Length: 224
Image (cartoon, rainbow, N blue to C red; front, side):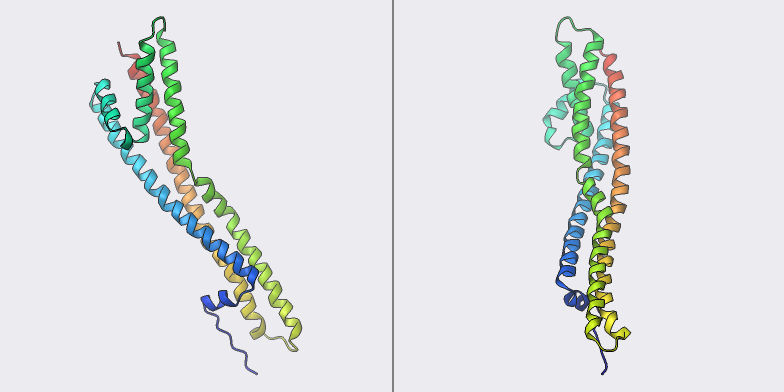
């Protein structure tokens, strides 16, 4: 008797065992979530970079810190990370300067602490969801491999009921199982690439923010 099977993608998923289908469904859900975070982080990092470029240009072009701070307060809702660091530092600097009996070292120490706290909050936002991408990239291949192992086990167990085993009997079961590995790789590869890229981008932004804080501290030390 001739044994024929449809080895196209969708029938392989439909004919897989329930557990393998659950693994595939979970991998599909995780892949969709990772793509959502990939695009979310792409736009967030791109916006943070462009806002930092615009503010640094305005900062070095305008020596009037009071005007810069007033502009920041007037449009604080759309301010970027670097502008919020500036606003926190300058507000603390002005407040401490108004206190009597505080030397310049204490004023600058308080200003740096205020900028550092805002800097940490901004970096937490920029680094959010990166751990999810790292988890997807490291775990998804193993989840897919689990589905593959289970599917192959079922394929060989089915041979016990066949008098004469041929490749036509075992190939569909193995093909169904290997789809789980393919879906695991499909979920993992973009997540790993995105995680490495965005980690590099956040490190560069972090260095940029820290350099600005040092430069801004030097500017404030020269203020009367």
